[in-house]
Image 1 (cartoon, helix red, strand yellow):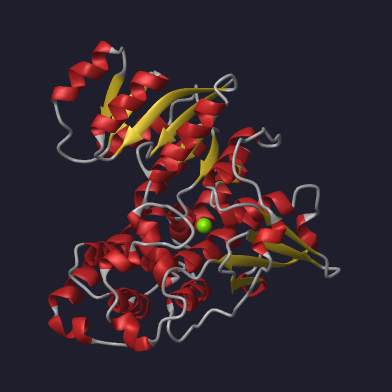
Image 2 (cartoon, rainbow, N blue to C red):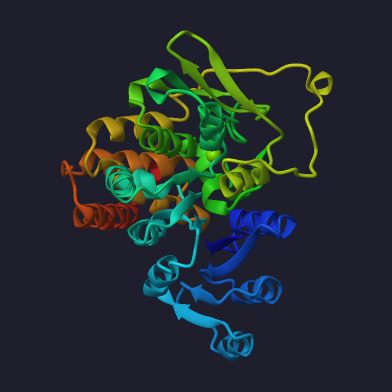
Length: 391
Ligand code: MG
């Protein structure tokens, strides 16, 4: 039986992980769960899964719950330090990191130090500090199992293959809700429209990232670090049906693709049961109902975020960490309705080019760049001018 710690258990992907564990309860035991703020839901999860320890990472954790957790015999940890402690629990066979944004980095590193296998749903960890994370994992012999559907697809395609024979990775993107919008329409996009993703049900941050196509840019960087493929050999193609989750082309021109219905349970379960598969009772593909699979080139003029992510990886050093932090901060402001949809990428672009990158950064350089980018975005937003800038 595998012992599992889940960070971000009350979010969309964390709940998917618990669904998988519930359906395979003979194989998995939950030993730790974290939430940022949804303490009531965490408590419900504890009644069902009975972990040994929980962490509430957000501020102002409601004290009235502490006794309730204690009555269940569950230890309560708090804050960022609590996340590190729960991630370092060496009883865990797998740490499933479903945190949102840069908060995922330090817990991932802490678990790798303890030689705990990582199931990574937090792509920002690799965007910020891919070199540091992957070299530490290599040093400790730790496997990083992708949970992101595209990376899970690639991981499934390369099983049994020689990684040096990969010629190209082709990441598919649904295109998000604004695929056929004009520049004028994009200027008027509302928060409610941006939160309505056509294919995947996900948390707010990733849904906005999908709408700007920044999500795909972050995934290009993630793929680069996970599979050690140069960025020049990673491509993005819009595939609105979201049936092909990604593809790998090998040096002989053969292409392998992984297909399935857009359901995160498949990628999550594969990470947990790897190298085996288990039955999932879910909807299956009926090809004659789908009829056709279509592909389009992404429109880099209307959706510059993906190209910007490529650019940050080419600049290298701390540039991807700045891209990531600036994006997190800008998306947060859009979610608060303080800036326009198109301003998100505009701000990130400004941050990436204003930053003085540090090459071969250590962890403190990365964290300093993250902080710098957040401050930069705050300053820009205080300057009204930026809000009227259009692409
Ligand atoms: Mg994805």
